[in-house]
Length: 291
Image (cartoon, rainbow, N blue to C red; front, side, top):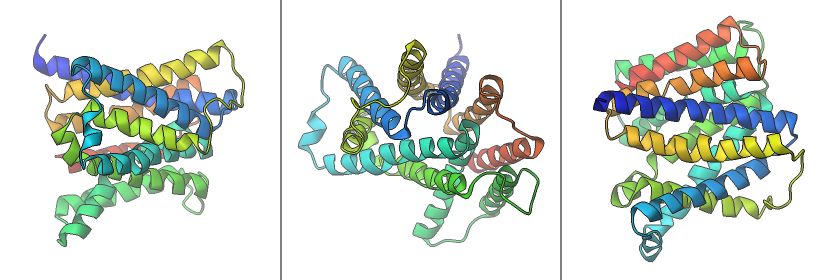
């Protein structure tokens, strides 16, 4: 099997599993009456432990040395504002809309990064950047109006949660770059998840469960944690060994598409023509930007 094919299989697996985790989460919110706070807490803690165990196995147990350096401060910041911020706002967007809309709005993250870099570097945007920003705005407009340009088709709360999620996702992408280069991504992401989950547990104790607990709930939660988080993340990391960043960005567009398709099939979500056009335009904007 060629390296390109290996990388493609890994990135496709990771992005589809990420998209599926949003759909599974919506199932727990709607059908099992589980709160977003409880799911965020449990998912971050258990996923963080799994990733730290994987890192310990691969690196002979060396997972605590980072706490003896000054890198522990950006690590804590990443866990709170990166991991916890993006997970909680993503689930909040799902609750106020649906998994497909939440995933697409989160996918605006590269546009937020462009605005941040333009502001911090004090330079004018290039034509490609301006065109991508314009496309993203048009796509978002179609997505939130469904073609009825006189009113919002999703709630204002959903739009705000989604845009805030994109901002936290931008922070999640930019902030830990330095310490990931010095250490390892599995270590940083694992500790970040665990830190975010522990902090969230002060607000929502993981052992205080409210909702419907049955075999379906247990299996869905396990799938979200194991497949939608740990395996998806490891597959994404493995793909970076074989594919260029540009190709990874293009294949990452499968995440919102997989979320849309799975939402239509399993959740009976109505996704109209204008919403689909909006999603395609947003993905096109990000793809152009990635090149």
